[in-house]
Image (tube, rainbow, N blue to C red; front, side):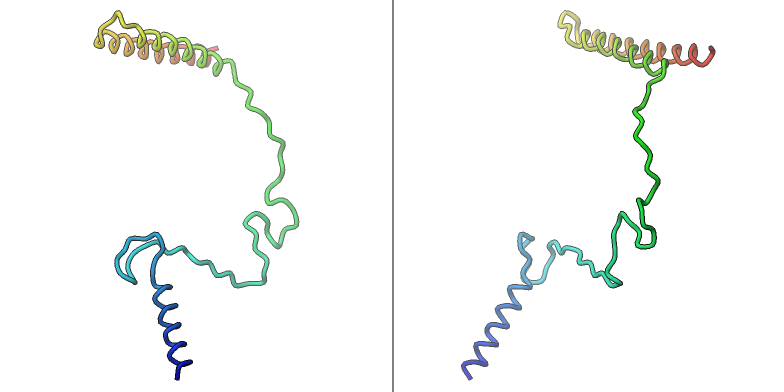
Length: 127
């Protein structure tokens, strides 16, 4: 009789402990919380997300990585943007101007920068 009571008490303890959610919101024994997704794999025992069991090689043809070679236009645009970024930063740091004047000057530089980039693209594609 003592063994049966001990087994029942152990079963109740295990059942109540497994129903609680660790580190979850406390909503009683059966509420809310995070339940991780379980994955069951049924099959022949071969699964690889990178290699196919029917193809003995790399999944796609190997090509050597070639570094990007910037064009003349890319370098011109980068130079224009760097120049105007420097001008904009210097205007933002200039404390002799009021906030309104600084914002107006920054807007003007950004407009000029966009115009210069468009001109560089036009000249590049014309020739």
